[in-house]
Image (cartoon, rainbow, N blue to C red; front, side, top):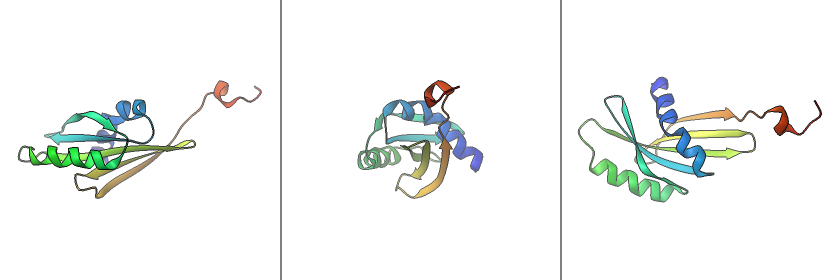
Length: 106
């Protein structure tokens, strides 16, 4: 299951990173294929409403997830929830900086 969660995060990563902090995306999964919703939300409530609409129209076997990204300092946290906001997985990542970004003598 961990591999599936990693694939879900990777499916939404670029859009969430470009959307700002925090960001919430709705993603549906069917037969190992992921489809990202058309919008990235800045708050959980609109993402939940979108997930509810998506889950109501889902095909049999299709699962709906909410993926969130929040950055604090040099750490980023990705969280995967089901369409009812139950936390399924959480992943922390460290943001790496180049020497030029560190602003320290070489």
